[in-house]
Image (cartoon, rainbow, N blue to C red; front, side, top):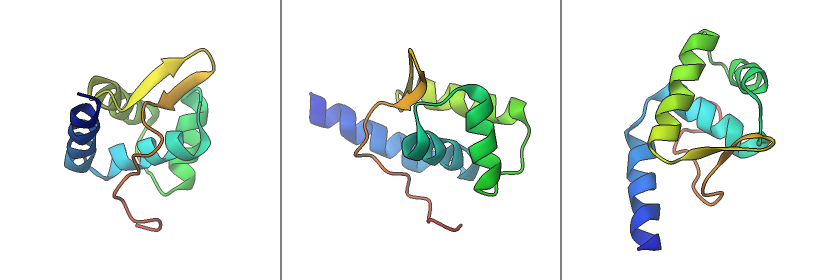
Length: 89
């Protein structure tokens, strides 16, 4: 069952757009993070959308069980799952 959940998360992550990948990568590399920190790292990676857009990206990542809320902020559910987005896309 665990492997099935990992595979589902991998497929869901691959189905998402660039903005989602930037937010996911931000959280994976720097998390756990609060909302303001996520947006700052997102912009540093080249993301150009508003805080509202990053909120929507986070909500979709939550919905897909890719990230979770912890005491310290948002963090990835599976640290072994990397975004397929290239480093300098």
